Image (cartoon, rainbow, N blue to C red):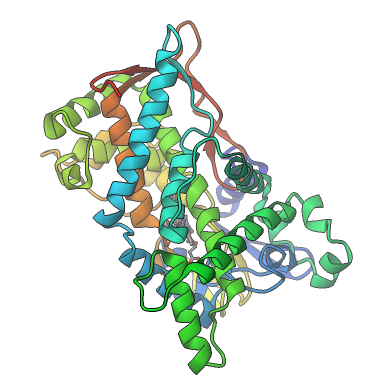
Length: 458
Ligand code: HEM
């Protein structure tokens, strides 16, 4: 959803007229609460009674008509599946260095591709449309399914297109309309008519299922798990023997993987894209970041071990995350019981749209939120300071499950790219727009830029 999206604009307008918490009805009976402004947003995210998720026939049509996956489940299923996924993704390298080699492999591939394109024309012009998607999905897929795709694999390209189209097609209000399941069964095209094209998920689910089946047939008892699918299958087998009401199942695994990709791929690649765009718009900041990287990393590409010594680079990334807020309305929450928010009573079952963008761009909290100013994240000694209103990953029990991976990915990609290339707008062309694409998640509009190779001749 773009900041220009009508729903987003409505949230801002309602807040101006009625204050940070505004309620209305979706259809005849569904209370819908819009939460805007740093204080109200933080209070809502930290209230455990508001950590549920909505469910409805349209959302269910993504996951075999059942409440499955990680993002739109709650209660015991959510707790068990989220805890399991977090623990094992950490073991397989989430936020740790063991996945770093994999990331660096993707980064050197990407650098080679940009380098080759840049060198193929006089002005070093590169098309940045979807250029980061393959690298990001390869990292996710290595953790989940232990496999890597070639950049030009047509099957893979089709899958990327499907995920992309689905994310671009969504609309928060429509996805949460209280449409009865019977209507979706009678009119399977209904979600599509409401802009939620669930058919796009069919080939994705088929692909995930084929990969799971391949894992089942090649898994050897007693061998170390190769990836998330293997550890999941081990746990499922164990639980099926001992626990009749287990939440582990093949459909649940497919849905969880679908949610990990739905939540992880577009967000990470868009963040890297926005960082490059902001570097083009702010050449002095780009140069200052590069100077710091040259100083600390010498001739090598940045690694996670360098990170603590790179406060300016960190501040630039924080500022990109703040100003771009790629998930401006987060993911809708739901009141699991009646509760209070900013002194208002929130009825049980209310759906809440919690406006994260209004926290990262709150004028009281940030003074000049409209300005791109990395220095705001540094103290007078140049050390990174954390502002409680910088919450692009949310906060509280529902905080993004992939935050450590996303932060590491963004750091390694952006730092490596800035160290390797000088990014500029195309000669005689206007600067590429910072205005995002309008969808549930913001992404940069396709753009061309000049990438002048610096240190490496790959
Ligand atoms: C820059 C990248 C990313 C951003 C800005 C981001 C942001 C968010 C936000 C705002 C939420 C909703 C929080 C809430 O409901 O209050 C969320 C949830 C989630 N994210 Fe991320 N995310 C990113 C990357 C990732 C990655 C890489 C993964 C996985 C590999 C991931 C997996 C998830 C999942 C599964 C949820 C649902 C968690 C739950 O409902 O318990 N995200 N993310």
